[in-house]
Image 1 (cartoon, rainbow, N blue to C red):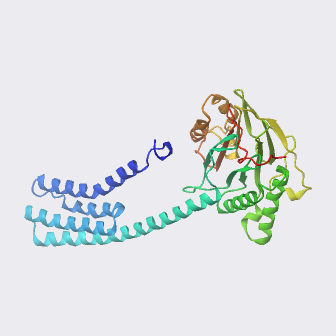
Image 2 (image 1 turned 90 degrees about the vertical axis):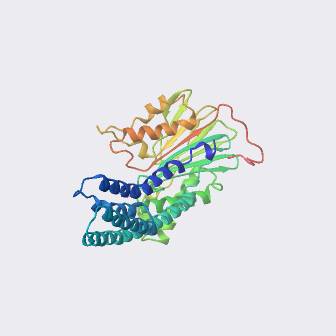
Image 3 (image 1 turned 30 degrees about the vertical axis):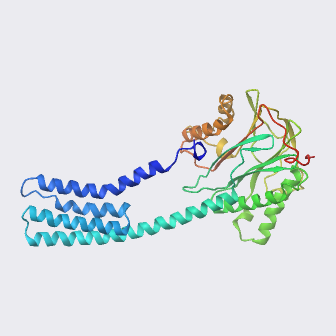
Length: 380
């Protein structure tokens, strides 16, 4: 199917838009018909004002003017057909003219707001592509699947962030969650993403990479001490997958433990000695403990933020993520996060009221070794 397997979104939008265009004309036609077929003394011509009023909601300024003029012409025709007095016709025309002028103003204001919203949306899309770039479906020997939902109404980015980078000899992945919401959280996420991208290929290990994230946020705070970003912390999960070993290395900076699916069984990977969240690590001497867990062909690893695990139902119970993932063990990997999104929306007492990010890392059952040119050197 074209468009990446997705149905075009134009069909539904065009149908709704055409219906909106037709409503003013339909209203005028119904009012005129009702006025002509009713008995003498019962007139519906006053309802012709519905035409320009509806046009202001969906039509352009010029189109609204046309509808208003059509309504005024119809009023004259109906007046002649019903033998109305000149005074009645003129009075009705003045009312229609006044409503049309008001409708023109409303249409103009709405059109300007729609144009401004379109420009802001376009800018937001560019910002999203810069900060949260589309995730590659496959890097090295692993497949990657992403779920990302911002809690802010109409927003495309939030305080959750992610990145996956092909490095010599393997793949490094980051998933994080900034404290709080709003533009301050987005600012902090952008700083951490910039620091990660600058250091991911050069850092000798995950511990050094975590230190670079801490340094990047501290430098930003020193450069702009009034920034909200300097006051926020972030939980971060870093993972590293080598091309030549069936293991995954993990480092948690206060982040929830990921879930490992192996041979149909799901279990959490608790961290024996997690690091503090980023921007809190300066409270004590920096030290990082890196976990190493078997991760072979057919295994899946689910990384997620607390927007997933802390979703509550009406009784206040947390979302049973481990149980749900176990039920979906036999589902295709590209289907799991779709099921998760749908299930979270139903489970939550108020839907999804927090940023949600989840990444499913999959080692395919038959993993082909990458070409030498694709992996020029091995990770330590």
